[in-house]
Amino acid sequence: MKPQPSLEDPDAVRRIQQALAQLGFFANGADLPGVFGSGTTAAVVAFQRSAFPADGSQWDGLVGRGTLAKLDARLLAGPAPRPGPSPSTDEVVQTMSAEDTQPVTFGYRIVEPSSVSRVDPGSGNLVTFGTMTPKVPIRRLMYRITRQGKVYWVGAAVPTTVEAFDEAQVFFHPAPGQAGLSDGDYPTFGGRWDTVYRYVPWLGSQLAESGRKQVLLVPFMAGHMYSTLGFLAGDPVARITELLGIIRGTVTGDATPPTVRAIGGASFSVGISALATFAQQAAPSGLLTDLTDFDGLYSNSPHKHFSGAGGAVLRRYMQGGLRPGGLRVYSAPGPRWAEFPPAAKTGKDVHALMPNLFLHAMSWLS
Image (tube, rainbow, N blue to C red):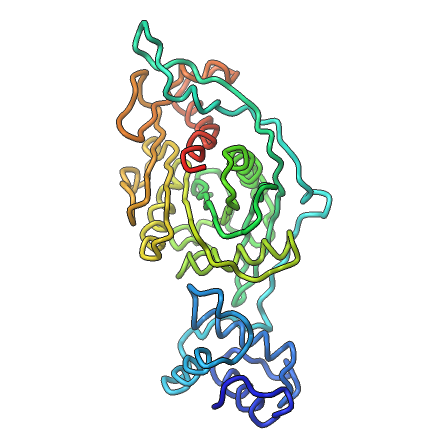
């Protein structure tokens, strides 16, 4: 085959359509035979996403020499068992109303960062956490993504300071079964699944306040998805690149996938299991900059002692005691939460407050 044919060369276009159909990317009727229309372009983009999962710059819908080489190689090898998404069944829908996606601030009471490591000079003990309220607006988004017949939900918070859409901070929520959430309600995000969405504005507000120009991504995962990372499964860096392009398209109208510069990951409680899986898979990209564990030690996760991956900086927040912790380990026992009523009387009470330290974690690389 020759590289990108002229739109007036129907024989060459037909050969490309036949090749894409043979590999499972082009559905009959998507375009007229020999017409390089929107259906053919969508099929080429779907193939490019499969062939170049980590290089969004290749997803341009043009059959250049690089795409042609991949296409010929796939044809010689025969159809793959899972050739990739079919453009006829894929769907991405931003489900929040236009009003709800407008920039807004939230009045959360969160931990004032400078108080985290402050020590009383008399006793040598860590002092009570100070409090503050985020002031930088964010946009909240929610996507329903249908791919190969499966439904995935992804939440996002975009600080109004974000311009390039080339950095992401990915947050992994605790396992849904522990919160009494049903896998059966996940496809519609019904039941109590909407309660998990609270992490988007809660953490997104803190990310914005930190000064980082990152997009917060929260891939919501049903129980059966938890070990494989839901929508991020297989190649999390490629999926993050795709999501950043989708989100940029929602906010600016330009859905071109960016060249990603940096990725961070964070988790709360047993979410450290998903964080550990994610970090191991994303580390080879060289894009992983920081990892944050909020009270994973309190959980029953087999990964609770996860120590990092890919050279990324790991910070750990734990209940601990009133003395300062080790390097990048921060103690947050009950007495330090006196300014967060009602009083934290149990380990479970303290555990629930831990995400209020997100601003402190994000402030280090701002």
